[in-house]
Amino acid sequence: MPDTLQTQYGLAQLDQTRHYDALVVGGGVVGLWLAKILAEEGLDVVLADKGACGSGGSGGLMGALLPHMPSGWNDKKQFQFESLAAMPALIGKLESQAGLNTGYRRCGRVSPIRKPGFLRQTESHAKKHDRVWNTGQTNQGQNFIYEHISMRGFQEWVEPSYAPLGLAHETLSGRVNPRDYMEALRASVAEVADIVEGFDFSFFDEGTGQAHSKDGKYSILAGKLVLSAGYQSFELLKPFVGEVIGQGVKGQAALFELEGFDNYPVTYDDGIYIVPHENGLCAIGSTSEKIWDNAHSTDYGLEKVIRRAKQLCPALRDARLVDSWAGVRPRCDAKDPLVGKLPGKPVYVATGGFKITLGTGHYMARALCDIILERPQVVPLPSCYTMAYHLEKMEERGQKDSDEDSDNE
Image (cartoon, rainbow, N blue to C red; front, side):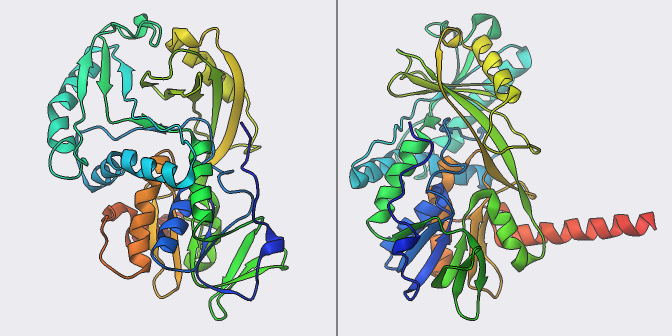
C-alpha cells in the first residue's frame, strides 16, 4: 500500500495562460469531490495540490464512517446523517466511473457496555433512533437499527470482560479504505477536470485572477478560488480574514493483518477505533494531538493506542503490524467545518471537518457548489458550518481577548 498516490499531472504540463472558471486548492476528499461536482456542472476546473492528491489527512488508514448519536438532534447531526445515508449509492456510482474499488461497506458499529449508565444511554438511543434515522426521505429508503445486544458471536472481537452488560450496536456506521477512496476519486476527477500536483499555493491576486506558487515560478489563472487544503487552509485564509481561525490536530493509526474479520462491525470504545477492512486487514487508532514535533512520524502515542486496542480486541493480540500512519487533520477554532464564500471576494473555503470529513466531504462539496453557482442549496448547510457563523465566532473571540486585555491593564 503506497504512502501517496502516483503523480500523473505535474507542473511541466501546466498551461499558465489558460483561464479556468475555478481553481480548487487541495486534493483531499472535499477538494476532489468539489472539483468533480463543479466540472460535471459545466465549469472549467483545475485542482492543485502541493503534493499528491490524497497524501494529506484524507489518505490515512482508518476510514471509519461513524454517525452522531440519535439524541439531541439538530441540523448538524441531520447533515451528517444524510451524508452517510447517501454513501452506498454514491460510492457505487464512483466505483463504476473509476473502475476501482474503494473498500466501502456499511458494516455497523459495536461498543462495549461496562456500566449501568451507558446501558441506560444505549436504551435511550434505541428508543429515539427510529424517529430521526428512519423517517422521511432522508434515509434514502433504508432502515437503520440502534439496539442493545448480547456478546454472543463477538467474544473474539470484543474482550468479554470489557462488556459485562453486552454491546451497543447500530447499523448506520460504515468503513472505507481511505487510500483506495482517494484513488477512485482522483481517477474520476481526472476525467472531467485538470489536476496539477506539486503546485504549492502561496497567494491569490484578485485583480488579475492569478494564483501564485510559493517559489514564484508558476501561476494559475482562475475566476474563483476555493481553499480546501485541510488544516493548511487556515494559514491560507489569514490574508483574507486577518487571523488563523483553526489548527491541525495530528492523528496516528496502524494497520494489522487479520484474516477472517472483514465483515465485522467497527468497534469503538473510549477513544479507540478498530476498523476491519477487506483483504484480511484491520486498522486501529487514533491519537488526537494539538502539539507535535513531526507531523508524519509515529511515536509512543501510537504504541499506547495499539496496547489498548489489543486489550479491547482479543483477535488483534497476535496480529502482525503491516503499516502505520501519522498525519494532520483540520479543526476550526469554532469546532465545526467551515464551508462558504468570503464576503465581497471570489474566494471560497471548505475545510475543518476533523474526524467526520471522510463521510461528509461529498455533501460539503455539493453545498459549496450550490453557493458558487449562486443557486438554492439542495443540501442545506448546518448553520454552524457557514461562513457567517465562523466570522461571528472570530469576532467574539477577538472581543473577548480585547476585554481581557482591558481587564489586565
